[in-house]
Image 1 (cartoon, helix red, strand yellow):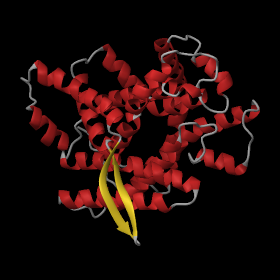
Image 2: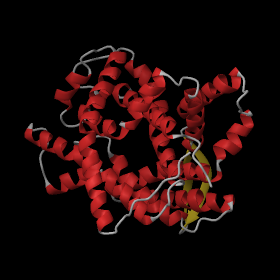
Image 3: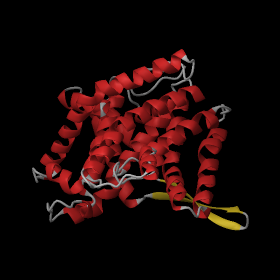
Image 4: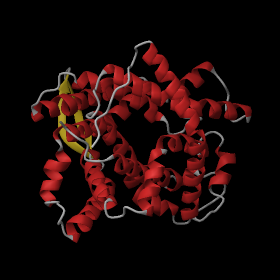
Length: 373
């Protein structure tokens, strides 16, 4: 039986780190997004250096999605249950935000516009929620692609990583529709992280590769426990600045040559997560608990922070950037979104629980147990 390398508390703390990186990415690495009059003389130089590194947050969430999928039963019913849980959580926030934006005059209601927002295909109100559509697609794809997965690592890499990536590269190059093209681009960019996460979980590569390489154990020295993990985190983080994609040549399809590109995050994501997880073992105190709490509410906090950069940003950014000091701005955004998430979490749980009871009564998407460490 395979078990997760990360226990529940560690996985929550890792999500907390990823969410903080997301907030830094959005708050400070796009100077043109700030419209409330606050200016930072250093912001452009900071953006040039750290826009790509902080964007690793997406690959961390994508990797963990594929990784933890290994420890579920991996059925279509399980995926449908996860998708409906996710969509209800999203709609619980998106619908009031759309209504508020329309009431304030910042957003013009239309059937297609609202539907696209609710599916994560439009970002006028829910600015950073393209991942909603991506999540639904990968949760449907995973049980189909892993149903007949072999015990051969080579075949698994081909079926999960190489063939889908090649197909997505070709599809993106040929896709004429902008909306569909955007969805395909996201899949081409981030599906490899999901696939590699699944492979790491299935074959226990954190234990077999990284623990073995570092010779980790109870008597490990300071260098193995702290220095090397810290170097791994920094190398993965800064590595995105220097190498964003890996070029694996080209494939020929219908007399056309198409470049086979893979995000460098297939290396950066596991390296970062492994290093960060082992560093967290050394700070099992206040900082760990803070990161854990943020991670537990990371999904709702992600949804809520859209309000600072959507069509209402001329009003909401005043609240976010009021402290002006960048550290205080970050803390302000985290606290505001955390409070909103905590206050609405009981409502989310009630809605999801009611939906699941209904599905269980209809024998659709029955409860699925997930194996944990």
